[in-house]
Image (tube, rainbow, N blue to C red; front, side):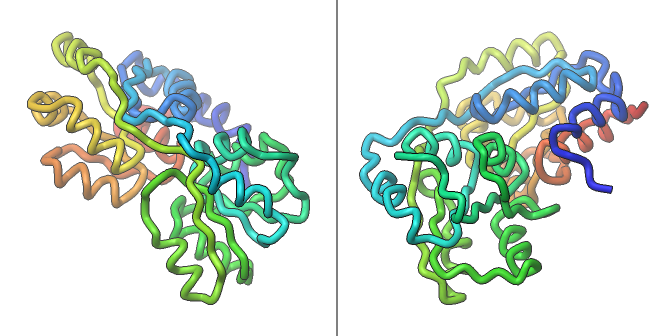
Length: 270
């Protein structure tokens, strides 16, 4: 039996009740992606400490985004790469979402952001929360979109667009926001380390992990070497290990996977 996304935090709170016993877990996500995970850490007995390594900014020039949104009726599938892409796109929508236009997401957080905004049906991978997982889900459903709009942040991988183009689709990739390194006070982590209160760190993207190491500078490996660093994707794990970190723990994808992995590591289940 599948569990509704809205019910998942309540299930976790019961299943992993008091798993963390007040231990402090640093969450490095941007603001609008951190709140839900912080609440879920708190629900299983932890104390989330927000330390953003990425700041989300609006584009200086929205001409390309506005042009794409003005011709939504020309696409048969719009793919959102992140919940930030959803939020920033909706801020520029000239009207409501066209009911005839199918939407897709690379993970449950992004799918939830679309659902919250009234998109009735969202295609999303059931387990592997990335571009490869979405392609596999399109294949499973027997869908071969011909005109695709991909809404994302500036930069990033081109694998999804390249794969769809190789299959004969016309693909337009449009940025709806930009990511910059956050200016967070590194002493937030330093004080936790000095007080021996840093229990673990969540790194949810390779770029965020790179910024974390840059921000901590010479302290990075010393401060992070002795604590578990939880990551929801193999690519992120590989990147963090390349930085020299030794306790990199790969969890399942999405917030649910991170919570289950954190609870399992600390060895407590209700």
